[in-house]
Image (cartoon, rainbow, N blue to C red; front, side, top):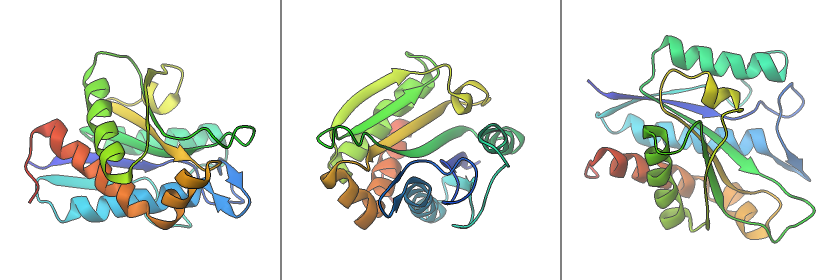
Amino acid sequence: MPIKIYIDQGHNPAGSPNAGAILGDIYEGDLNYRVGADLKEILDTDPRFEARLSRPTPTTVLGTSNATSLAARVDAANRWPADYFISIHANINPNNPALNGTEMYVYRLRTQANWLAESLMKGVNDIAGTKNNGIFARPSLFVLRATHMPAVLAELGYMSNPSDADKLVNDPQSFARGLYTGLLNYFGLAPL
């Protein structure tokens, strides 16, 4: 049985509800979409995994508000049912463009989600070259609280940091490869 990974590309396209952060001509929803689509493409070549996307196309809009958008993602993962849930995001802090790096959020520390987050973090840091800003418990986040499987929310980098933004915009594949490497390490699998 393949391991079922639900990839949630956080937020919707620009101009729709729950569109995420925007900085100049950089749209978080678009960045998240690309990394998630690239990750699914990689997982589709590995028969040990089965992957589904929350947003199968760049124009897919989930829900009519922030709340219904989040609920649609969680409901789809729970109904499948997925074995693991990864929500992909990009951070922003326009007041401090020096802030950079990757953060991971889980419902509770010292859980399977926490250990998965550690593995995903190492993969992203090693391959995309981002800084490890840590793993934090965020039980208030709906996608972590309402999923029925271990769930990780990954803030891959800062759109407001020139170096992180360059990687997110021009090399989303490195984040996807990092997440894939993290999954392999978590499950103790060798690359194909």
